[in-house]
Length: 164
Image 1: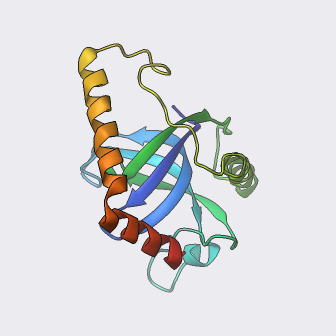
Image 2: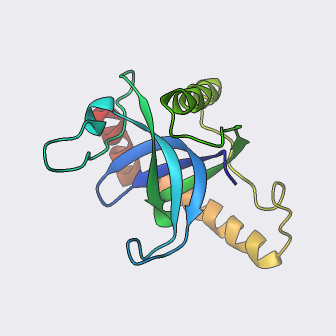
């Protein structure tokens, strides 16, 4: 749904976009052969300036730096978290003021939840009662606990935090 908060991370390039706001879904086409989610992401304004002869290459905003919201297509496999929270977004996100208001709402939500936004629960929030889902969710939780206890994971997490 439009307005749902999602977290975007590209493990392949190591780019962590952080939280963004889902705007719409794009079905596969010749230009983009995978499902894509249009997400308003927090970008570095300097990365949105057009270079001569080529289009802008958006980059995530730096922590504490200037921010500009930009709607970008994101392949679904790059969405790492879907939040239970939604915000109201304007119908038209082309005007700068409309994007700015959504960015401010998003920043306020993230600030209110320093430990991370609450995740969308398929059972409680979506009403899915399939037993296979419960079993899969339990296995995922167990694997995440094992992963977080792994010393290599802790080392990589501390490296990434130090880079920011």
